[in-house]
Image 1 (cartoon, rainbow, N blue to C red):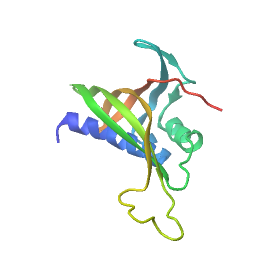
Image 2 (image 1 turned 180 degrees about the horizontal axis):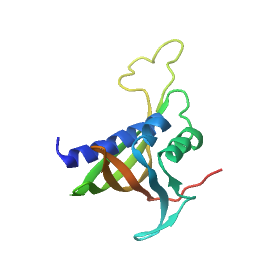
Image 3 (image 1 turned 45 degrees about the vertical axis):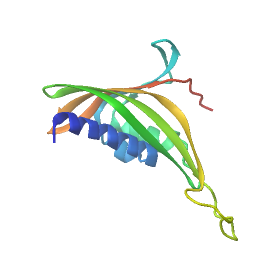
Length: 160
C-alpha cells in the first residue's frame, strides 16, 4: 500500500469513528500533542474559530464521547470525503479533502407492515454539513498519526 493510501485510510478511520461516535477509536488516530481546530466560514476563504482548540488524542476522545449528540433510535450519519490532495515529505504529510455529512433516519416499520407498494429503503437521508478537512500527519513508530487537524466548515455552528 502506498504512503498516500495509508494517509487516506487515516481519514477514512476518522470519519467512521465520527459517524459511530467512537471517541476512543478517533482519539487513537491523533498524537498526544495534536492540535484540533474547528473553523466556520465567514466569507470567501475566511474562517472564524469555533470554540477552543483540542490538544491531543485524549481530548479528541473526550469531545466525541461527551459533546457530540448521540444518534436517535433509527438514526445515523455518514461522511463522504473526496478530492483528496495528499503531499508526503518523508515522515510528514499534509492531507486536504472535501467532506459532506449525511444524516439518516430510518422510518419505523408500521405495526401492520409496510403499505402496499412500498419498496426500497424507508426513511430519510439529508445533507447536514460540508467543508474541508485540512490535516497534518506524522509517521510515529511506522504509523501515520494526525498532528494538526482543521475542520473548515462551510456554515456557522451553534452550541447550546
